[in-house]
Length: 151
Image 1 (cartoon, rainbow, N blue to C red):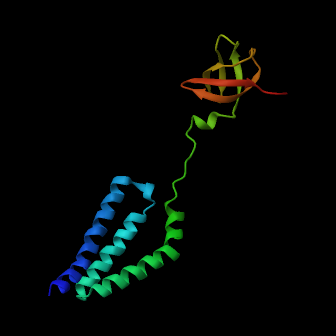
Image 2: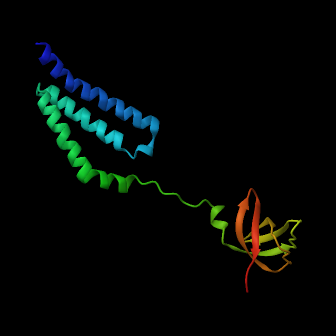
Image 3: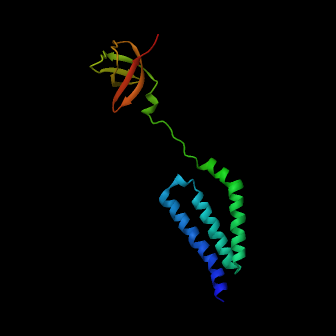
């Protein structure tokens, strides 16, 4: 009788562990790649199946089959869909852009450049005169680090 109760509780433990894995995914975030939610769901489904059929074997076999299917087929599909990509922000897109100097830039004194329709504060390691074309190399706050465009 005790053994039967213990085996029946395996299905219940699967449901509880599945719920805990899903909650853990909520705390960790996407860093786990959605794996904890899917494995937790597999354990919950398997646990409820074991409870419904009153068999720990059903829950164990179903968990093994679903896990195998997820690892072999589903994981690759999920990883493709969940991949988070990084996109350049508007400021990052300025790097490599060309600008025209509207106020002389010297090594010790920043000047101004016109980039698209906006004027920016700019610094350079070399002196750059008004009217010359520069290329943005870096951005620090609202100051562009520029170099003179090679002709």
